[in-house]
Length: 128
Image (cartoon, one colour):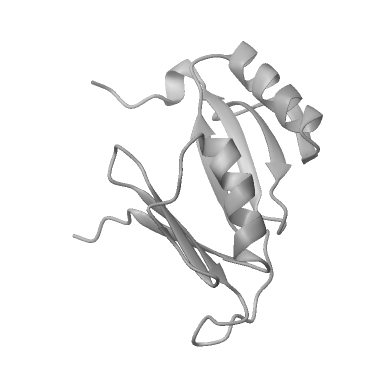
């Protein structure tokens, strides 16, 4: 069975994107070059930022067709997280709202990649 644990985002300027994600995650990338950077998390998940000008094969799509989702413990955390992002200048494309999977809101990173904060609805949580 394949289990994805490595996400790559194609970005216009890896150095600018590293600055953005370094502040967002509060950590340094484990690898950084002019065309590529990678963050590794305690869970084993990895997020890489790759220059869209050097990706092979060439990128033909633009940002916004996928999202990074960040689960939070409660609705107040979603509200405060989005307020913090807005204060930092991120574009908020979805104000906090209740959807079938939970309470959520969304912002864009500098390249237009979607960043979702959400608190899962109690009935959408997996059984233990």
